[in-house]
Length: 354
Image (cartoon, rainbow, N blue to C red; front, side):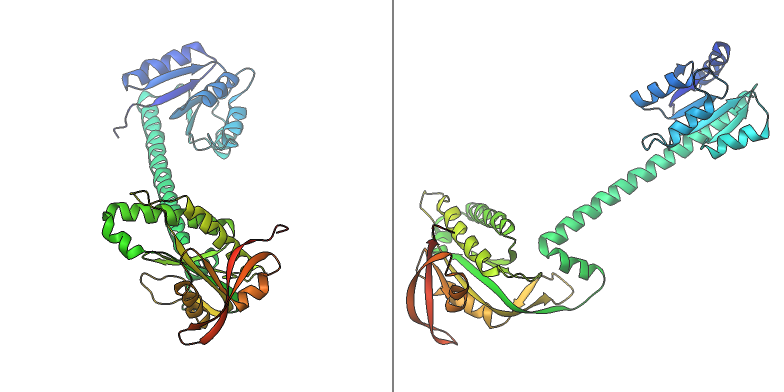
């Protein structure tokens, strides 16, 4: 068996035994370090890495048994292979060493061929263990990446249900709040700047919106071009969902005011909010996403598309839940496709006490 040169710690209080081992092992190309007792050996093992320990049993201060016990209770060193070299041919001694975690047991005086075989076998086992640990670590890293990617697409409770094999997933919620937002004049903007600049601008804007959504524990549903959609009160129901999306809307306006186009023009957006019942879930098996269905989605979208530029328009349902904490301007009745005339309100800020 051909094994690459390794770093070996020889622990023996007998100088002649250390020299004899060194004479043989140096011929194999191994790098050797010496310790006269167990205490020194542990200090060396804690200070730098080794591939193998050749350990004598009978030593002053700390014997080989004690060294083995310390090694095998140390998470960083418990897998380090140890070959015991002992002058005792008692079966109990060998059994105790193996029980304490020694890789092998070799009697003194040893035969060079047998020593070489035991050392090489132990080093090969360590190499295989190291390779296994490397692949286990890589697998864990890939699993963490996959988990992170999944959680960037789906809410954590939904992701857990999918991993358990549940499909399709569909849940009814008695009341949530949905927000739609889009950038005013986006079509004109796409014609005036390069695709790279456009994507960079949207990334900056939406990344800031993502941070705000996380701040208010609001679930981002999707983006479509320049449109941004979120919902509060799902997948875990909450009682403050309307307050959360209203706070988010105001902070989104503030965040957008800090953004400008490549030519220095300010950006504006329309935001619409509605509150009501909804069905939410995941359907399909490819490129799936967490989505919403129900009249609330259509109405929230209509609130956004019919809002004046730079404003936040909410329905009476949302207004009635948060009016004590915020400032509104009643807009009156406006025509809403599929709903007829609806009374809506423009959110203008927070009340001082809020």
